[in-house]
Length: 244
Ligand code: BT5
Image: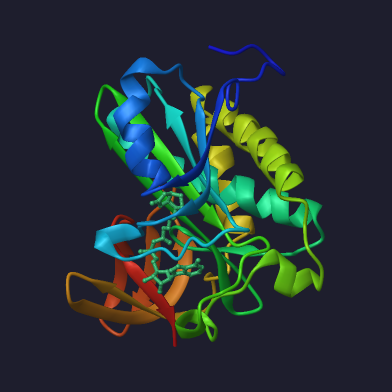
């Protein structure tokens, strides 16, 4: 366990010019690498989102995965996705971009997605925390209406190494909070930085659609929706959420 101020995330950084997916690569090496190892690639040829969706990963963006080996109870592990989103929001704020979290795993700014987080793992062995952040990369034509980058928001390039450095620092900070079991602080921060609370949203899970007002994120990180049929608790996982 790291002491105060000690650095766990990024003690080792594996930098690849190209890889299929940093999450896949991290999974392959996870058992042989120390906790906190970061895999970062200039581009991914098969970057992935949840449920087999594609993640566009051309050069100029930040495509990375962190190998974590937390000893927390399995029920807390889904909260690691929030660690990623919170660290990205902090990083963007440091660069002057006031982004927020679109529950459960996206970071958005000005109505567009700038980052997605994907956690995968094997219980008792490791969790891979994958983060894709559009920095200086071009946004593919088909995503232009719904995605943006730091460069597009700032009107100039951001230094990729500096973005990585700040992000690692913030991940380290939030992961320490997680390891110390201060889950309430994580959820409070997610609530504060949430873009969905108070808004009408549509949640889609396994083909079922629910429309309602997002009224809270509970202590487990579930979204509380007020629907015409009463309050519904939506657990994160493979849920898609749209603003209506
Ligand atoms: C996510 O999935 O948002 C998680 C993305 C995680 C990507 C990182 S990159 C490093 C690591 N290695 C990997 O292979 N993956 C992780 P999801 O919520 O399913 O959203 C996917 C959707 O986002 C796609 O269907 C597109 O609509 C959209 N999308 C794809 N590429 C994008 C991009 N570069 N920027 C913004 N939106 C994108």
